[in-house]
Image 1: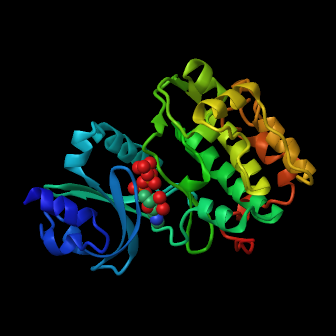
Image 2: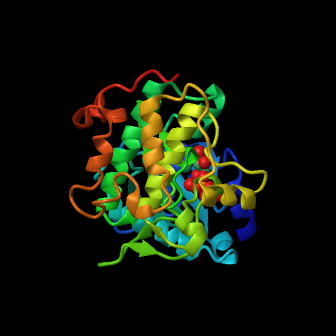
Image 3: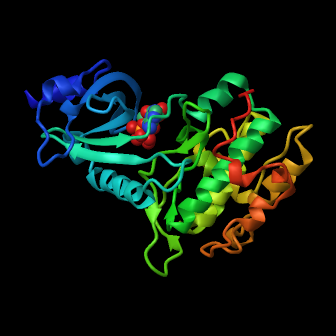
Length: 314
Ligand code: ATP
């Protein structure tokens, strides 16, 4: 019976609330407080479903993680790490998916998240081939601004890529997927363990399994390149060959690539993590000042970046 419930919950068009009628205990939310709608996407250990809070009418994306599956794959710690990272980031930045609440029943963990109605930036890039310079500037500026906040909170993302940049109803980004995020302890500025997606992995990770906030800057360079060029900066025929290219800094700009953007990418895709633009003052309150002042961002109004309307996506 339990297995059946798992299957039902993971299947599209499932209605967890209709079979998980645990009423709220101590005022805590439960699945019965929500009307579950369409499945927004599936992860390796989770299903994300659009849901409306029946009491407030507010809409969310609820990430449902199957406890049995997490246990079998030894991923319970990862799920808890994701929750802890999201709690640490709180509601402090509009560019980061906010965790509103969590609850569980016998079978599942539920994370109630900001709903990003317009899906992944990756599918927009794929659909359009590449993004206009205006859009590339806008989305990379939002990424830098959100990263600045995240890094000040002591969090490294470690898996930044356009799949993890979601778009909300106003076409502003919301960074998601903190399953591989890392909270740095006091005094620590680097973390061991290998994580990441081949095309965006920084060379220090491949060479000595170390990541720091600066590894997120490398990924930012890869993302900016990809938005403008419409292809990965580093892509080999296999993961191994991709990594070899990264280690050799073997990439080239297509003809016509904007000169200022090129200069910025070249200052981010630097092998020595301490030499990347914005890395100099990591950890200080001046974090990323050098990055924000780069000529590519000269037309960006950082103060109104999250209130100005997004440029048309093209
Ligand atoms: P994996 O666990 O394999 O790394 P993932 O991180 O993409 O995959 P989830 O976080 O479960 O897994 O997300 C699954 C899909 O649901 C995502 O690809 C995304 O398209 C969609 N999704 C996730 N969070 C939201 C959200 N807050 N709003 C809208 N859609 C979302």
